[in-house]
Amino acid sequence: RAHVQLMEETPTTIDDAVGLADIVLMVFVLSAVPPKRVPRFMKQIFDATKCGGKVCFRDYALYDLPMMRFKETHSVHSTCSDADGRTPRLYERGDGTLSRFFSLDTIRDIFESSGFIMEELRYATVFNDNRKTGERLKRAFVHAVFRKPQD
Image 1 (cartoon, rainbow, N blue to C red):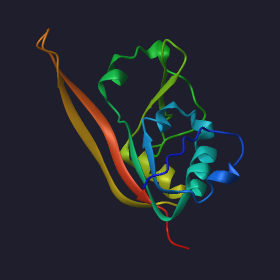
Image 2 (cartoon, helix red, strand yellow; image 1 turned 90 degrees about the horizontal axis):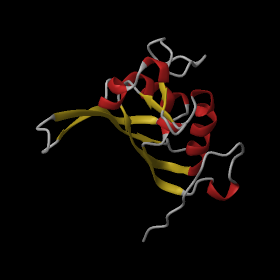
Image 3 (cartoon, rainbow, N blue to C red; image 1 turned 90 degrees about the vertical axis):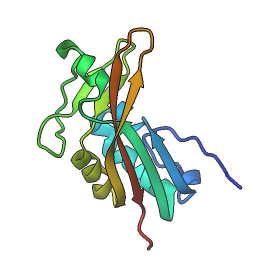
């Protein structure tokens, strides 16, 4: 039996969601959160996850095809820094939404500094074949599983 709860980033903790989830799916979510809001957002995820619960994560990796296609004029300046000491690879799409590209070290730092324990962390590469043009497009994602420790 499954109970599904949609959560959005909010300025405060959602009391109804504390300890609610055995499994949290974060699929292409963190890349849209402004870097300054990530610590608060991750606290909400940590609070919503039951002790021993897991977070299944997938998001854009460094050098994914869209990152390579963004023009430098779409780069967004941030005062934060990633695990490698560089500013986040953060871009603004034409519709105003953000797109951030992560390294494994950055994801590990974000989750571990929020209290999670890493169980799995790797790059996932997928090839999309465009039949019309014959082009083979390489996509790169960060795939991870983190666990909230028992009390």
